Length: 321
Ligand SMILES: *Cc1c(COP(=O)(O)O)cnc(C)c1O
Image (tube, rainbow, N blue to C red; front, side, top):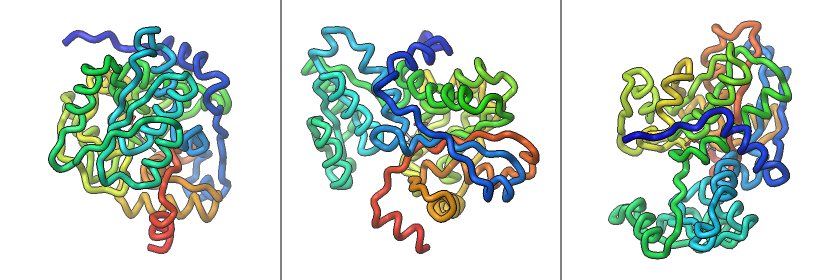
């Protein structure tokens, strides 16, 4: 299969499309964490992005590029998580009809949020039905365009705008830590970093239970795994994508893993010391910085906090654990 990979220019174009639609999220620092790890750490807070995660960036960029015919047909996406909300809000803002395919057991709050943005929700049974087949069938039958959560040039270019903003606001960094699921965020970040901060190491961070990205990076081939058992639900992907993997392989320095316990510890730090709510997957970056701190002494380090969507019951349980 021959594909044309996006470049940094696509990230720049995405940033122009996102102007006025996406939040330019804040960059926070913490003296406590700087002292703990011996580095200067800058947190890019996508938990404050519209819909509570960076997914809005890629979704909006992809939908803003739709042709008139695609707009009429509408968009379909399959997701029970942050991509669903990103697509639903972007579609609403751009007046494009949206259908989201969700499992019957998706959390009621997420279904309500998605419907609240005006999307139609179609349910499937996650144990007996194949959501990709359902999404493709809907797309074919109704002339809808399927937008995947990571493996799409416009999606990953949109995600890269967060790192672009980070470098524009804090200048050069020695290392940038990015949570890794299917690699939309990591590949977009890589495009921005290679262009704006060539000396900066880009480090992908996965849950230990789902290290398909690390295996793929180290072997040079996309490795498929079963759905991993981890609290990082935004990184429960089974494999990297045809667009995301080559960019990651070429421009990322390494992929590391952290445990669920390390994620919970980072989540507690965010709430207690920085007063911010971060979902488990959003904690990957800080957990890895703490783990690798011996290598980071005296360095300037970026962390992308990827999202903040978590049920408050679950948050309470993690904080008490
Ligand atoms: C989707 C998501 C990720 C992983 O992003 P990919 O582009 O799939 O690698 C990380 N954190 C959060 C909060 C997410 O929603």
